[in-house]
Amino acid sequence: MSLVPPVAAPSPTPSAASPAPSAAVAAPTPSPAPSTSAAPSPRGPVAAELSIPSIGVEDLDVLPYEGTTDDRAGTRIQDRGVAASPHGARGGVGPGEVGNYLVTAHRLSAGGPLRELPSVEVGDVVHVTADGTVYTYEIVETRSTSFRSARSLAEQRAAVPGEPGEKPTRAMITLSTCATPEDNAAGNFWRDAQHNPEHRIDKIGVLTSTRPA
Image 1 (cartoon, rainbow, N blue to C red):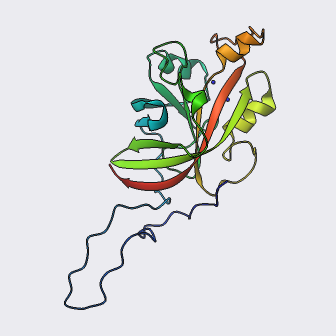
Image 2: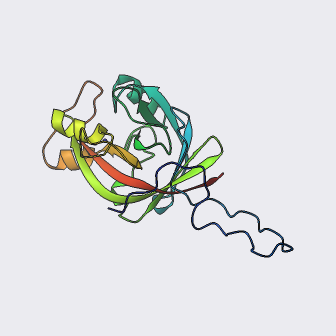
């Protein structure tokens, strides 16, 4: 633990996929279908639950904290066997917000909730449930982050993953876990102050739909 077309800007109007009301005056108006809009309202730092069907992760608690990825506060949260999501000046945004929703969890220790994250593939979906809304992201890219490179860290934590300084126009997610087995196999036994290895495996996704939980 380090395209698809832009999604629509935030709007309270229903998705284009929602059924239109009947043109006949006497005909009943159909009930709105669940929203598939990728235009959420800002939520800020809230607790959430994460599900990744392709690797069997279901309802993993994601706890927000003010800080940056894998710092001491974030590592303490991960040590409880849950995921951590940094926010604030050095972190990311909340679930469904335009920008980079950063989520980190252990791969080997504390139950290894993201043990199988490296096998997540482009096209797999990720569901984040927060405050009665389910946000669905689609994985579009795999990245590697080095905690010994300021540039690499900046790319991981950027509002647009991989593009520091770029203004975000869509909601994205970065799922990150350690590359301990890979580093060890390469003879890289460097560890940071929290005993994390140098490299992180990051899965990047874009928001594709929202619906009531």
